[in-house]
Structure formats: structure tokens, C-alpha cells
Length: 79
Image 1 (cartoon, rainbow, N blue to C red):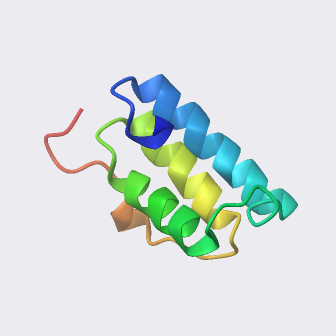
Image 2 (cartoon, one colour):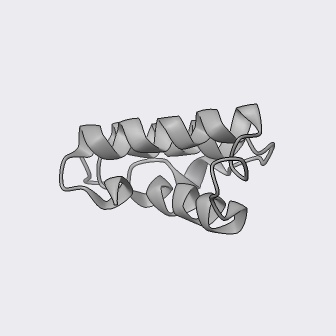
């Protein structure tokens, strides 16, 4: 799907939209599995692209969860 697309901008936009669905309570209305959506968003917090990682952190935060900064901070030596 779009969350695994080779283009980082596509992944960023997809996770951003999922976050909007979460915020508006539309995940189940869109016939999506809430646990799978949450897991997919959380998984993108380790994406190599910083923009995708940031969008995933924002989307995950829309669930009301706190995220440790170390889980989204770039690794030493990473661009």
C-alpha cells in the first residue's frame, strides 16, 4: 500500500491522512482495522525519511499517546 511506497512523500501524505482519520474518528467508518492502523502508524516512526517519521509521530499522537523523543530522534550519523 501507500505506507510502503518507495517515494517518501507518498508515505508522508498517507500517514498524515491516516492521522486525520484517527483525529476525526473515521477509522472504523472507513472499514479499517483500528489496531492495524495504529501499528502501521507506529511502524513509520522508524522510517528513514525524517518527514515521514515526523508525520507518523503527529498521527500517532492523535490517538492521545505520548511518544518518547528518543524513538523519533535521528540516530547519530544519520542525515
